[in-house]
Image (cartoon, rainbow over all chains, first blue to last red; front, top):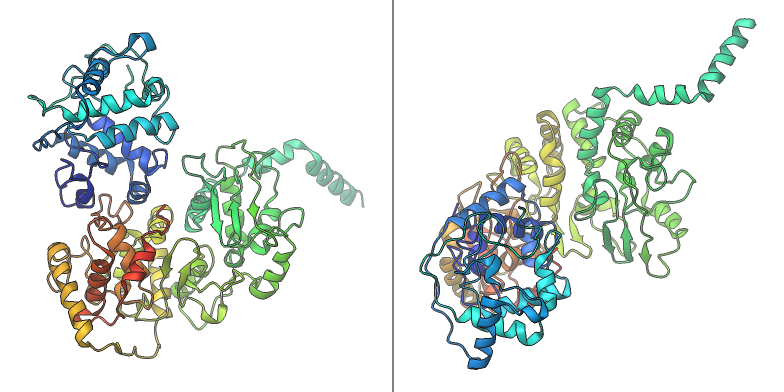
Length: 203
Length: 416
């Protein structure tokens, strides 16, 4: 399988560990259902990024599922976290949103769905560690402006639209500063109390 | 006389009776429907008449042309927005003559200049099949063409220049297999739409049939099918051509770019006999050509520097899959030595493959293809030019060198 997905390596690393380019995410160890949903969305053009849309355009559901399962099964080492360049206040704001949300503005904590260790949950919720700030804020921006969408109800679109620019910056700064998780695995299906309905994570 | 009158009356009643009409529809023979579905695939109707994430055959796909954007039409049997009210005569008129039921002219993005060769029987089978697909109520989007191309009467001029109406006529001096291949390639396959050069008026130059051309707006080069230096298939075995058409990979090379779409949606579904017939016809197209001239660009001091730079990149980034001497490991890693696709007059395709990488299509014969990594981020324009020049000229390949400027221009090519 590694040879078949060599086309992914220049941007995502030979084992899906990510590369030095901050805009390309780690794939390894994310739940297969999440990766599969993204592969389908890129293939069908719903998630827009031309190099990905182009590569996947003529691949079958079955093959995309195998690719997703392959990257979900890998556990390469996490990169060392990037030393934060943002102030302590910004990082603290990020930590608050990630762990406790912002009840006043109806923002749920990230950990409610992505897990207390932020490792994600099977089948459709990704882990949030090992990603760079530029990628995280890029995705949250994509949801706010509609260039990234998921199956309805699109919970992340709702959450992202509640965040301010400063919130996005703070969350991205905090998440990207976290060290590798001690146990890099995702939570089992249905084990987390999700505060929002999510089309990608059917009950 | 009374018998004649009764006969006339019965005929009239049948013609007027709605029961008569529905009985006629129900009579669609499953074998005819299966044939119609097969032929619709051979014609690749779905590729244009289905939008991304859209309903099958409901149209709405934007087709960018040098003259503006056309939107494909709904060909489901919905009576209001599709072709549900069309008769088989009207359908044949569209396929054969490029006219709507009201006589209006169809833009030649619809390949009626090829489909005109389709027999009435095959047209009727496709028609019967299209009547059985789920109807979708979806209004056709108006075309967005620039002046003066938004004037449909201009199509008359195009037709005068480029359209020759007429069903396929078999050549009695050739085999049945060759004739079948000719019919599929020139008719439903509409291969000439890309593989014949397009002139400034958007017409195919028949005098240069299958001699290759740059596909407008897509920036992929559709190689010549008549020259053995390009993708003329004279040096290929029938099995290699069949593999290429149906699996998307072969011992000689893999499909990529727009051809990947054709294999994915259409050619992989051909049966053995038809794939062979097309291969026999395509191979025949390339025979009898003049011998290819050797490359004129003999290495100067400057070009040997470029080549040694190219070789160092090749050895580092390419050789692990394509082999130290370009031999590849077919079918998963195509050979580059002797690969016509690398040596074509236009260097667009090899440059784009290096920049963008790519996957052959997932087919039943090759469901999990190997992908070529994109090198756009890793290599500079100079490096791309050097490595492409190297693979175009090493191991006996006879391509011309490429410049960093050519590589740079293709970084902006539309990907998808």
